[in-house]
Length: 139
Image (tube, rainbow, N blue to C red):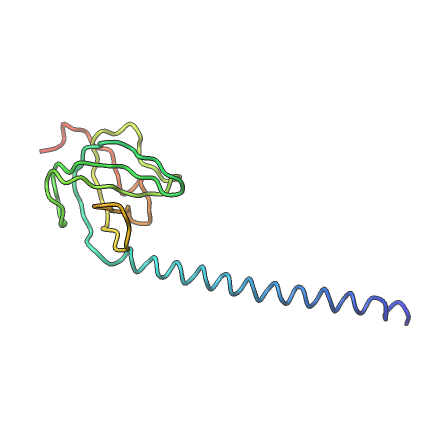
């Protein structure tokens, strides 16, 4: 009986700690979900663009990397020929770094930012949003 009295406070503390940590985890998960849903709104709204671009240069970055392109031909969307755009993508989904010309499938970034003419690859996937093409295949 004495052993149970000594163990009982420790069990109560352990149960209390686990129940508190699970509540914080749920709150953190809800915060993450809210950020994802607010991000989806910015990705789904705005103009989609398909264009052929000539690479000016890869700009690098931290989590999001950037590439700058000069638009050669607009297939659809609101861009004009000779516009210069910056395109964002995740560093681990970067496009082929040997490309000089690319088919760009991007969306206008709708949130406030300091970058002019900023577009993003859908789901920040540079492999799908910036696809290498041959210069000879451009009309």
